[in-house]
Image (cartoon, rainbow, N blue to C red; front, side):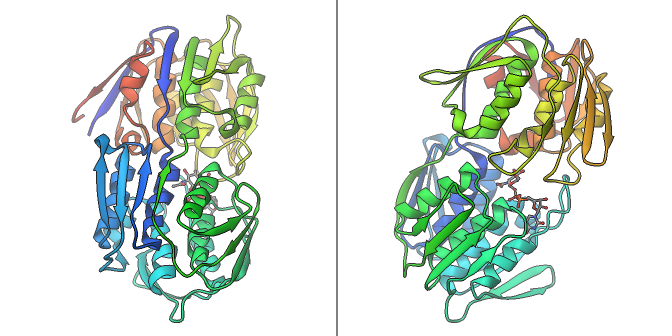
Length: 422
Ligand code: UD1
């Protein structure tokens, strides 16, 4: 298994290009299952999770071709010959559950393995299932699989999500596009990746209103066609690289970055004393001479502070002046980076869903272990600001969600290298 070695090397300067959003691409790809015409996605990120979704779609009989080195994905589901999403793939990637709604909506049946828990919490899929039931799906849970049927096709219905779920909103939205009649999804997630999905579905012929708000209204159509769609920029990759100059000093321009994707995060950076400016090409982040100020944040569904940036924010707060409270309100077990950061000299006290972080002058390099995707990158960020060398073990998580991370950071002056097989 690869490791990444990072050595604290002073301020960072330069530009970092931001890729298309992993989480948008992971929901746009299954949208191919709704149509027998081709779906072309441009600005796709080159990540192992995207390859995994490709493998899953191929296992169902879809064609998946990568062009331009993986930046363009040509998808076609004109000849689906399998409606079973196998446990072996689903257990490796939770987003696999997103094939359920589209397959069921188009062909009236689907069998999808239940994903099981993951490192950051139990993460059930009950809301995905309840929303599909509200559209007339008949579900049977057997042998670890959801067996779903909609013999006469799905029909429009109203469903109010008891809590905001990104994935469940996506599954229900895709399914509703081909349901007979009108569907109203209340308390829907408002993440930019869902608005991106809605835009793509509309290009395919879907009738959707309200994306970006908490009520989605979908008028079902008989069939959807093909489309070409550019994946929205990755706001989590963007936020991650915005932390890099904040924690190391210097100035980095994130190319393709948009403030509307990361407003709550930028507000937090502003409170911490970090300057973010819009440029023609993206967002420029500057850390002045003063210290980073301790800043409290609580994670929330969009437009609140994203849970996927909590670990990176914690790395920043580890060297801030004063004590900050970081509250995790989305996942029950998402502080596994805290003990690893403490191995680097951070002062963190975790009580339930709240971490109290007291800044130290300087972190110290240490061997640490990556536990999940965002935890991995928070340890790299911490290593960039630490004295000496930090080795992050088990970095395969990183390749799921960050394209060319070493190259992007090296180009702005970081000392970072990958060691294969350790
Ligand atoms: C998506 C993102 C993930 C991000 C998360 C929250 C993708 C591929 N992943 O995950 O990176 O961290 O949004 O912004 O887009 N829940 C239930 N029942 C359900 C579904 C969810 O109880 O059926 C709970 C979850 O356990 C969690 C909360 O709802 O506590 C939010 O989860 P959700 O928004 O569904 O996250 P994902 O779509 O899995």
